[in-house]
Length: 438
Image (cartoon, rainbow, N blue to C red; front, side, top):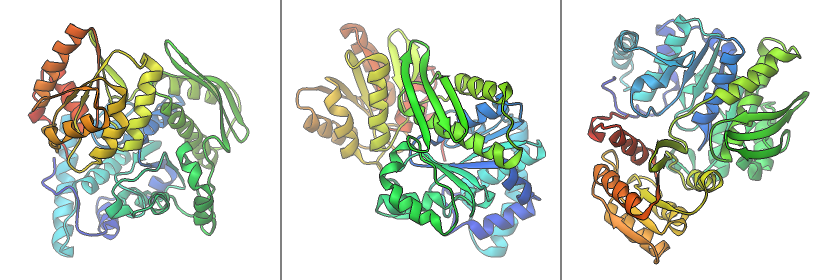
């Protein structure tokens, strides 16, 4: 869509502010109507939950997420519908012109994510969205979402990722992500951030930022798995909702649903005033129940059962594996695994290998790491496993289908986004090479 590098030159905040001004973005309205979601894992699901609640409440809702899975249009949604090709082309052209002018004047290159963030701002403004959910790219301190000025944000989780940019400790990483929030605001923190609570509270104190945590100020009880999904009780401040239901699989989704609910409630209190009664409760219940988010423990086929997961950090992969066992059972699986060359293959192998006795190692077309090296890691972490190598995702798909039929097994595809999505594309009859990512 944009002939731009993935990352721009240096810190983008000044040139992004100039770009938004050139495009005529009303920053004050953007601040009033938006929330920003940062974190290492769970951002997309949390954003989807939050947008779904807003839609159920009757608000015209914009949703900006990344990365896309099959088409770049997925990143820009209004009312749950992705932008059409023609409006996408028209907006992209306008932004490309503005970027060209500013780049020449400043002598700086923009990055692709910066351009797409600006496109989302312009699309949502011209469509008069009443509520907008923006998922951060990397971190929060220097990410374009900081320019929203949102005073209601979230940090879904924290894990070691992009350490060269965010810092080499969890304290540094969570601090960076927290800086997406404006002073005097509220940051909703996910459950795994609780170990960093003393640091987070002190970090936010001088900015007068409220810091509620899932499992502390945001209370969850009554968690249960049913055939239709998961149930839980939620309480935050004066709000108490029992027997909420979500359809997304994995215990980690309760954390994401709780963050999204608290995020929307706090935004509504600050922006529109809070009214007790059925409409809001109905919206929360309906929004959570109807929310869908592809790629996270998603069943893409039934005969045999094929479940894919796009998690790419060790912690996210462990959580998804626990969710797989919780939802479908621990036995009878074939693992198809591929890890991007820039991810922590050793830690991912340690998280997955012991749980599977039949493993197919492969390499995605996009950023795929060496399949032979990955197979060696898997054998080291589980010497008893039957480990095979498939040079491509297409071969991995064919091999896993054959092995599943002969062994009466189910298939789990994990290790990273590109592996999972390319596998799903092949299952649809598509060529993984035709997918385009930024």
